[in-house]
Image (cartoon, rainbow, N blue to C red; front, top):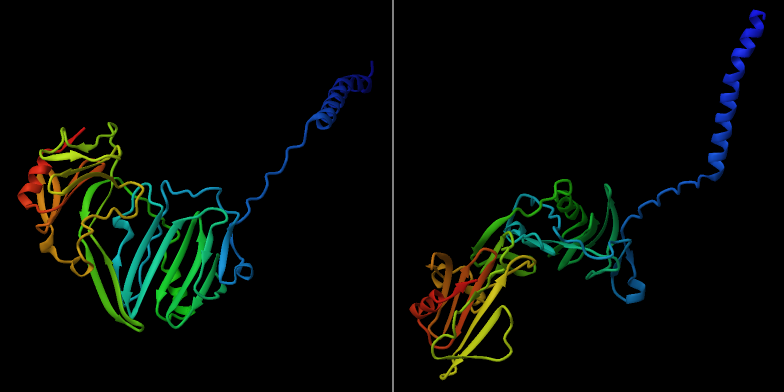
Length: 344
């Protein structure tokens, strides 16, 4: 056999192998279903339905099927020079907060930034017809009026609203939007329950006196108590009779003189505000003499007592006890009632 014949016989098996491979590849392509291309994610936006509603109204399109707020991202904001922050959402944020509110006073205006979880078809109503503005990657709806101005936009799973009491031109509105740190969202860290004193702050504005105020609150982001313990009386307080219609976490009693006593367990998680001492009038929110710091059975508490009304609030691990007495009562008697409470 010549050298040329030997080479031919050597190449024949290789050709057969290549032919078989090509045939297998062809058959596999014929019988293997084509992989579908993933559908592009549709961007969430606000759709103007004002003509149908007869007022400036927008609805969320392509939003989440339900609100996502566990936890809800909180976007910090740094105010321009001349403004003082009076309400700080970081102080009341917790793992299940549904919304955040920050307030600023200055330059004769009141500026409020609201952030909330959003869902598909949520409605957004504005006080006046806005102008659509493209600001970087954001689509804003800005409006300016003599008494009300603002901007609305979507980001992530949140709706953000900038609300101004007074006239603010678009350029200044955009400056505020630029100061919202959308690149560094904050999330609540676990923290123990605490008391937030009330406050009332005022400035003279373009449209009159501008005020931002809040009563006393219990705040924090505690880890849930695995035992789900509640504050309760081990037995009915002396001289009182339980009332009907009791709740699993709330009990009410009444004595022969018509005085009413109630014990309510207040959970903080999931609430933007857990208000206490609601009997204190707004003008006295910042009066430190009205609320007294106490310790009852080793637990931190606050007591408000006027003679014909008493309220004692004690902090637990993830729940606060709110004890209210409607009738003639002394601070000492309120503390004695608080000492009989158990947590179990």
